[in-house]
Amino acid sequence: MLQFPYKYNGVPYCGNYCTEGVIGCMDSTALNYNPLANMPDICTPIIFGCTNSLAFNYDPLANVDDSTCVSIIIGCMDSTAFNFNPTANTNDPLSCIPVIYGCMDDTMFNYNPAANTSDGSCIPIVFGCTDALAFNYDSTANTNNNSCLPVVLGCTDATAFNFNPLANTNDSTCIPYIYGCTDVTMWNYNSLANTDNGSCEPFIYGCMDSTAFNYDPLANTDNGTCDSIIYGCTNPTALNYDPLANTDDLSCILPIYGCTDSTAFNFNPLANTDNGTCDSIVYGCTNPIALNYNLLANTDDGSCITPIYGCMDSTMFNYNPLANTDNGTCEPFVYGCTDVLGANYNPLANTNDNTCYYNPGCTDPLYLEFYNQGFTADFDDGSCLTLVVYGCTDATMFNYDPLANVDNGTCIPVINGCTDSTQFNYDPLANTDNGTCVPYIYGCTDVNAYNYNPLANTNDNSCCLISGCTDSTALNYNQFACYDDNSCITIVTGCTDVSAWNYNPAANVSDSSTCLYSAGCYGGPGIPYWLNDGCYAWVIDV
Image (tube, rainbow, N blue to C red; front, side):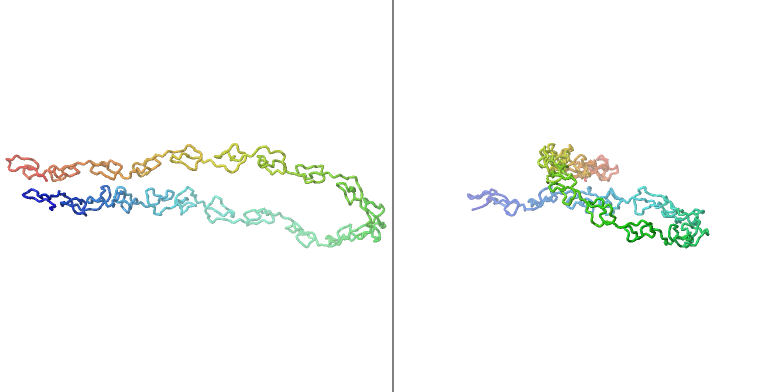
């Protein structure tokens, strides 16, 4: 069976077995392969690549996208620039910022506001006196703080005689203090002294011989009056008084009067002169308060019976078993609190019955008075009146409870701030709104951007960092610019060939088809001539 028609005398013929022809690419590896085709046509080979015309690596020859498209990333591709973007694939040379090294710390002495890259050169500010001629010049200071002091010469030694408290620079003129007596009329005048120390002593005349009888230890000038020492008893009342002696040698024997009879009652073994007062010894009780006192006795024989007064009734509170003389002081037992510090002290009680209490008050911890009384009661006096209500009692706290009377430590401090979660400065820790909420203001927050909005507090990614001509019809149109800087140049099309007759110096886009050239005739370039002239000017279209 014929698969394709053939021509007979120019007319397709296939007889009764003709098959409809389908023209198409029959290469199964081609892009336009047609499995129904039975008549070959031109095949288009498959070319893989990026078919997105907006992609950085767009391939106009590709007809099958292989998912390799890379988005255009505009940025500074100068690796030496401050804002070099290693991810950029489309250079924006106008956005590159050169690296400026310097100190970027505005608290430093050599702060450079133009620097964008720290070079570690910062020098701290050192305040001090920078005047090299001043007393307190500081060679390490780099910033003068007006503390300079002028040099004042003088003696700076505070221990020197001529110390100058105003001087700050020693000129080696110091004179040491020489203390002594500066009064020329005094016994110990010192001609070298420059500072009187109050030690002046007047002349004291007397005997200065320490071995002499009339030696004067206070004298500093001997006047020749010394006497020799004569030792002996100088007391005229003594038994051995020596009228020639001038120095007592402690040998005096003074008379001691008394009874010198060793058998007498009043014998005085120290007496050396009997005065006739001796008495005979009489033994007995010599204590006048004793029960057996003997008025005639002068020598106690230990027989005295001393009276012991007290209550002799054994049933009484103050019974004294040692008493031998009842004095009518018996007291009956009286029971009660005998501690004077006790709240229920009984001044009439003489026998403690252990009923004392010291801090009467509220003893029930369920009542406010238990906590407010300032002490722990040991006896309930009925003063418990107000039931306890626990809570925060600090009126400055957020959860202050005006009904609470006992603080339980649950107070929460007031935290002022914006409590509206829809606001820009919402503070999740605040519990008291202080009216400071600030709404979100969207805009460009980059101060370096051309459309920077100083009122915005939330960046909306609208910042424009590239300026240029944004007019697509202009000669210098910048497709990457988002801020027009009025630099657009209007396109002026014309002949830019200076050798052409119609050269346009204002044209910035050449249109060579408009240029006119001279045929070289004598009549002048560009001037048409009549045909009957010897030559004629013609127009050459280059």
